[in-house]
Image (cartoon, rainbow, N blue to C red; front, side, top):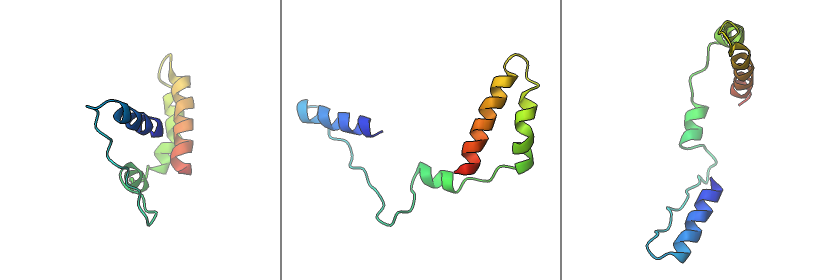
Length: 81
């Protein structure tokens, strides 16, 4: 994200018709805003569903193993955050 913002600034410096990007606003109190706030206040997943979901993915033909591995990685990231 920072690369896109910096490249937009660089283009605005060199090309007259490119407008500068909006300034990025960061909270001074440290509380999350936007997508981080939505992630922090997300409804919790049912733990029994999370426990059974990788096993249920194994019943999908051909790609079930890959879905189960992806599901375990997603659940790890979901519950660690």
